[in-house]
Length: 347
Image 1 (cartoon, rainbow, N blue to C red):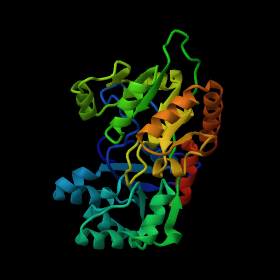
Image 2 (cartoon, rainbow, N blue to C red):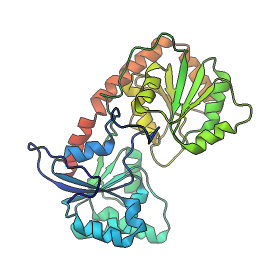
Image 3 (cartoon, rainbow, N blue to C red):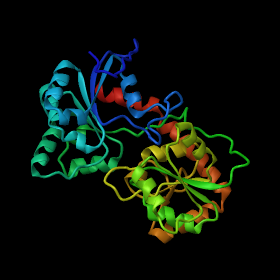
C-alpha cells in the first residue's frame, strides 16, 4: 500500500523491491516552491524510487516525530523490504528509524553530515550505525568521520557521488544582449559578506539567487547596498537554468558547515558548462579538481575577491574549465549512475 501522494514505479527488467523512504521533503534547488513542475529537473529522490523497481513509499520524517500514533500506523502498514533514511543526520536520530533497523535489519542510511547530539542520542546513533545494512555518504569526509569518531564499520560504508539532471541542466548559447554577470545561488548557508564584497569590487553585476526569505530580507534591509548586487527570488527552474547558462561564472561562498552545502548548485553550474568557484571543504573535496573542473577559493575574504577578479579576466580559461566541468559531470554525476550505485547498495 502506498501512502497518499506516493508514486508507484516499476521496471520488469529489475528486481521488484518494496522500499520505505523516511525522509525530509525531496528537494533539489527549490528556488520557487510554488512554480509549476512541468518543466523541472528530476530530483535525487525521484532517481532512487525509480531506480530499484517495485514499490516505493515516501514518508516525511517530521510527520512521524510529531504524531507517534500516526507514525506507528504508517510504519506497520508498509511492509517494506528495505527502509531507506534520506537526508541530514537528524533523520538518523528519529527513534522509529532505529526501531525499523533493529526489527528488519534492512536499513540503508544516507548521510550528509555527522551529528553532534547529547549523550542519550549518541547511544542511539551508534546503535543505529551498527543496525544499518549499508551506510551511504555523498562525501568521503563524512564517511571518515563516521568511522573514526562514531565507530561505523568501514565495510558498510559506500561513497555515492551526488547526481544532477544533466538533461535539464546543460550548456546553451549565451544571449548576446545580456550584460555580463556572475551568479551566486543558494539559501542560508552562503557567506553574504563575500557576496557584498564581490558586488563592491567587480565591474559586472553579481546576481544572488535564493528562495530563503531571511536572505531576501537581509538584502532589503542592507544599508548602502551595492548597485551591482541584484537579488532574485521566486524563480522557476528554467529561469534559474538560464541564469547559469548566461553567467560568466558561478561562485559558491559556502560557509564552513559539517555537511557538503551547495552540492546541488555546484553540480547544476558544472552541468551548464560553467566554471564554479567554491571554498575548500566537503562541498569541493570529492567534486572539484582545482584548475581543471573548477576553482578552489583559498584564503580569506580579500583573497577570494581577488581570485574571482583574476579569473574573470581570462575568458579562455573560464571556457576551458567549464567544458571540463560538463564532461566530468557526464562521466561521474548522472542520475543513471546514482541508480546503479543505489541498486548495488540495496539489492
